[in-house]
Length: 274
Image (cartoon, rainbow, N blue to C red):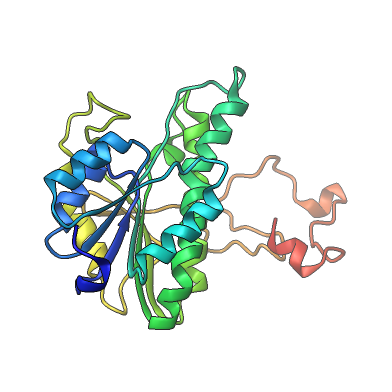
């Protein structure tokens, strides 16, 4: 392994490096980047390091109880990180009415909380240097809400919201934070999927190479941009009004029912959250 101080390539941190998508990312990016690979399978990480000279491997459980101190220690070892791919994922089917708490908790820890903490760890340095690229690996699950996968869908929805919010918080600097779904690709979570992990690489390259005026806070899938929300044109959240194209729960206008939907008695901060 090349010492970090001797490697002049830009550093890219990749989580979930020993899965199907993660290994494809490491192989693809190792030529251009100083790859810092994270995973929780020590044996698989050793095999990855042996097969890809120059890759730095770190064994880390993103749902572990010491995640905050583990990330702090990792950042001290890695130095400046200009690129981050939050690829690690957890998906265990569980219906909402059966043992959802444990599955939801771990799903949130791996799929949302750990990516948020890693973003928080690298963003200050990116802001100081005036540059950064973050790609958070998401899924179509929160848009489709497949039965039996509530925890996975909810955790990826949280990741989507975190990503868009972080992007908006960094609009004033050349930091691009986007979402990418790799598509129906084979991985440890989906060994029977129809596509090879490599199909996502052109989209990933595009997101890592975005210009200063490029997209941020957006969702991409196999070369397509996917809308995260429906069109909200015409909705006035503070006034509580929507255009005629939005279905109403009842046909009568608020005036005829005597209801006050103006929100006049609600603070602006409360209204912004509704």
